Length: 306
Length: 280
Image 1 (cartoon, helix red, strand yellow):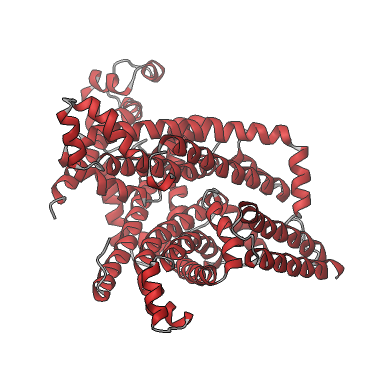
Image 2: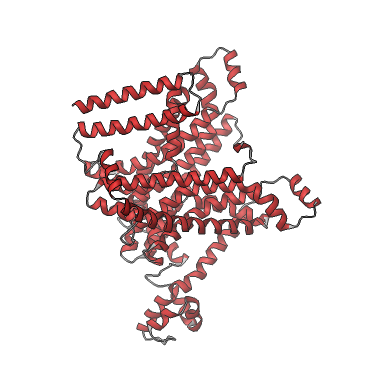
């Protein structure tokens, strides 16, 4: 609770910097527009204005400053423009409308969740395999670690196109990428988690004459829960990023990624920014939901959250 | 058909070999520890080769590994030009700028407890966001050459490094700080002699996370506009020409560059944080 005030301060500071930056970023555009509408601008040609920095131009023509906040196609939209656009497209449109961000959000969210579920499940299976099989541990684990250093995400668009060419369309190709990206964090985290019981605890189970399977269900799995949630948080945000990147340059027609690109290509930056911030909110919500589940689960299990 | 059978045979041989090695006497020796994953990888590659030939997979979907290697040896100059443009100019420049900015902000925020408590949650929140999405916007702002890529990379690596650096700078005990005070050390000597060294394991954690992010940012940003050189550019244009072996060649380069980048940062970490329990 006591960090609310500092967090708010930082957020307000960031928004303030943004608000101030809007003026120099947009003033050239606003100047051109105002001149076409017959206003007097110093200096009076667009080329001469290009020589000046944004701040200088704004100081010479203070009457332009309000205009920089209302431009239709700004370089940097002001916070209130993005906010209004987000409000409009989230609450103002029918959910099944092509202009509704809720619709686009669902198009992105569905493959993210499906992929995350697949990736987490497979990751868990592989982690169990690695913990119980020395061969799998020795041959796969190094690759799982190395794979984390490879920029796979950058290849997401290609994977989409290849799968599309083979005839896989719809939710599935994006889910494959989301699954891949959540897979390795879960493997690496869960292997650590399943190995977290110390020798003393394992020895205790041995004195009880428990089998390996019982040891797994009664000791290894419960003590890996905190690791599972930590990996899930990394995995789900990686999944979302993967889905969005997959949508970006592949000519996808719907989804946050497509929305960002459409706004960029058709000169509607406010659209892009609204999509960007909605994606950010979605990511925050997903991580938040997992944190909530984590907290209540760990409390029920009597584990102190880390 | 021969090739399919050969593929399964290679699988069986590789698997048995690894079972033998992993359960054998020398399984903890370092040669075996490197050998087993290597055998696993080579087995996969050979199976890939055999199955692609055996099932007559169209090279437009999946080229053979041998095609990819051939392509890589034939196109060294192209690949080097792409590497230079994307990794050295785009990713590395951005990485250095973003890293320095993050460290500077961390030191500033660290001066007040209030700011630290504000920056930490906001930073870790930002680190989880799909920041790559700013790539189209930045390409518009900074032009299509490497500057825009460096900017995307700088923003992407900023938050993980910032969060780790801020957390690291707090990681001294009051006992250690009191000792510095008894020496009469002021803010700056305490910072450079105690707090920064103590923060190094954290900072390197952030730097390591950021290596992969840097490559992703630099490559993805090229999908939105680039000069006619660069790994992202080559991947998307080769894709358009259905030259999948070239795409894979770039993927291999990206993978090698990613691992090498990570490896170099890890090596530097070993040298700097030799005193930390995890390195001993």
